Length: 122
Image 1 (cartoon, helix red, strand yellow):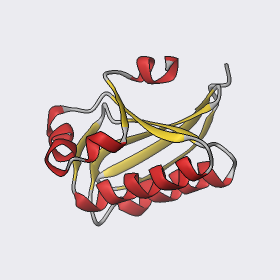
Image 2: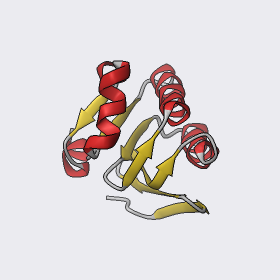
Image 3: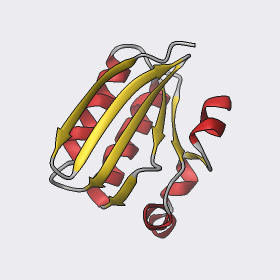
Image 4: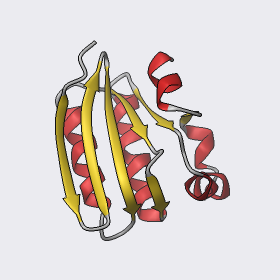
């Protein structure tokens, strides 16, 4: 399997790492995803899609906060990935982040996995 690190970015409260794992691009946001940090996640997601990686796995296990702006970034990536024949899989969400998806009903439009390992195995 190809597990090379593709890149990372950091802006204070959010760091995003990207790596390839087989057919998937694994995007790991670490910290707080909000209005001020959303572009740090949007840009690597769009870059993966531009490079032909339409199966995106977002490892949320280190995401401590997500507001509506962050949710919209993920929803936008989902639409683009599905248009390219892929999808966005969310893995390992902490309860505080999962609650945002529950309240908004967004969990119904994503494939949600308990762990990164199960997302990659799917």
